[in-house]
Length: 312
Ligand SMILES: [Zn+2]
Image (tube, rainbow, N blue to C red):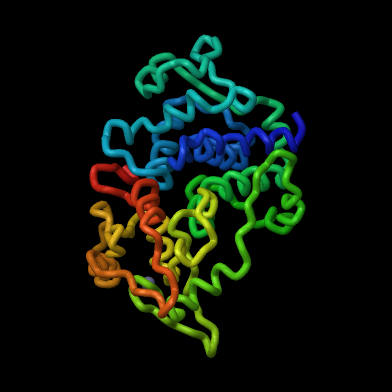
């Protein structure tokens, strides 16, 4: 396997999406394995070891589920189904387990299921530039930039050194689809909302330059959300992060929702609760409001609805 082939295999994980449903389970398992590899030099892991941390990642960064029982074993799906050109899964006797086995945590534990990225994959990942490129590709294709640092921290990946050679990874391997962000999107969105957070009105500036204000995609760029004002919101950094994590959401009539799973004790923390039911700021005259279809996407794929178990 060459580095290009590895990148192609990782890029192909995106095709697991069904329609517009996000499927970040396999990418999150792989990102977690990359963190483990950079810490220990090996990706060998039993299902029992992976279940808790990987399920937690999927609950935190994936779409919500409604059943607590399912939330606990979400790691089972990618553990069973991760492509076998990348992943070797065996039972306690060393017999390979195929992708047709039931994705049930208890069953995988009973069989002593343990997996490891294939030796040729680990060999490529021993190069820090390749490991960083692999992690970056998965984050770009499945998440949104405001979550990059949170995901890296959650899986224990420190890519600081490798960011220096980010340019090198711009040479996308053949067959890999990469949609660039349209330059101008951020400026148009900030302008449309008068350089103020559409949730709280924050409009801080340093001299003449806005600070702590960002253009958020409602439907993520990586999930085919267009770089257009009708898919954007000007948000302060805090509300952008909370929106991307699904703590904050929107109703189709553009009223703000706060997830019932959100908890805070301090006055500043509880200020977020006060946003519940408030209308989003309307854009400047002549600027399109957020399209309901993008709001519906966010509500289904990102917003943490009650019933889902987050962080366990
Ligand atoms: Zn704000």
